[in-house]
Image (cartoon, rainbow, N blue to C red; front, side):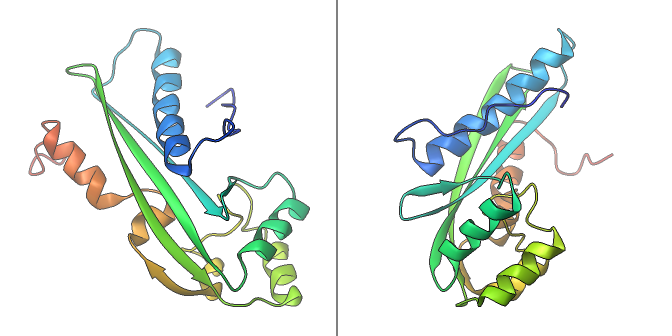
Length: 171
């Protein structure tokens, strides 16, 4: 997308409310950019991490990523992911949200420093990728692995079917 969305949560917004809003805003931004050319489907998704009521989006710096990882180490945190689906045939947006939990091992300062040096923290919620080297820190997950990665596949599939997608019609 050429221009960025404002990704700052509103005051008192829950992680679920935030990810639902962001997934729909991403769809609306694409619709605006298409200038009247309406596609059949658009999917938008968003994921945030939260601990103690604090929402962690994407870290804007290495220092901020380090602060996030320090708050996550040795603790369970919540992962909120929402997916929205625009159905161009009937001009509707459907949305679903999934809440999962991840527990981190009690990381040392040197482990955090090593991970920050990989650069993998950039552009991801909570400053780690569970599908990458960040998996080294995970002791347990509860919920949907695909939602933690960033797209709740089961919920997305159900949305497609409920919106008229024919699963045997893959091209």
